[in-house]
Length: 356
Ligand code: HCI
Image 1 (cartoon, rainbow, N blue to C red):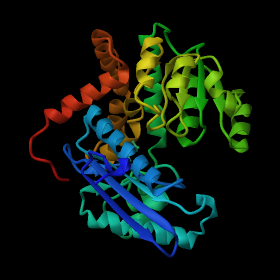
Image 2 (tube, protein in one colour):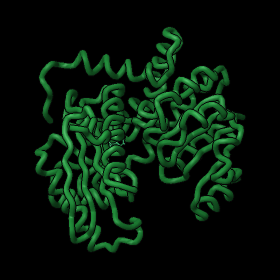
Image 3 (cartoon, rainbow, N blue to C red):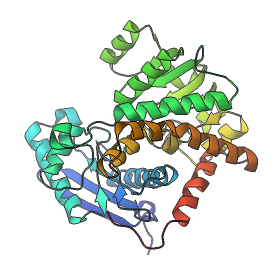
């Protein structure tokens, strides 16, 4: 039997469902429950094929596994994809609520082995709707007893990662450095704010004209979306979609470092190695963007105060320093080094899988 390559995935479980009425396909992938129940957000997007949606869910679930492990959080990795038949903004509220409810039914059947949360195109209000059907959801609104949006804390973690990376590179503080932020959504705009307050010169790119007007008002310089990967800067911060750095881009990127918020920034296996050879410091995305997980898991599972969430998020700088040190001593790329640290944590965990 010849298997489709998207099915050759070494995670633990894939659940799929199709809804004829809306034309939506649902995918939940549990990459690993070794450290605890699999957790990871629900992404709603259009995909060219079901295979691409499966592949995306698998890669994103895998990123959650290493993120939780390297961040020392007692959760595994999973992710959901809701593959839409039309752009999200063309779906009316009743249809959207039906979609979320069907997704919530699927989550509920997994009986706590998978916990969802907000991701691209889903927010706290959507988590409230999911919570009408299942309890296994992070990031509900505060009114519903949830921790709300994790965007600010994610931005804070990326900012800490930028500071640690600048020090590692011998660039000192962010004051006077040029930071290019790609994507001014909730997380990217927060990163731009924090870097600007620290004295960085901001270059920003987005497809949305309102967001660009906001940036212009703050005095940031605008870079065209087609020029992002060829504009010189000290730190490139990809905060939009993943997959922006393939090998060809890695060969040319005119930056000293890459420190962003997007999940799965690297588009192929060789990109990290190429950046390493060119002495471009790559801060692994699953280390830098863990602030969201600290906020959600910290507040909702571990009972942390805001202060503890803040302290653990600032610790992202220390984790990165560990990654850089391991990469240097082994002359390996930073993505590999961070995966080694994650694997160590997974391998030294209790042999019995834990439940919530
Ligand atoms: C993320 O890191 O992608 C968001 C954090 C998160 C953590 C747990 C469940 C859903 C989302």
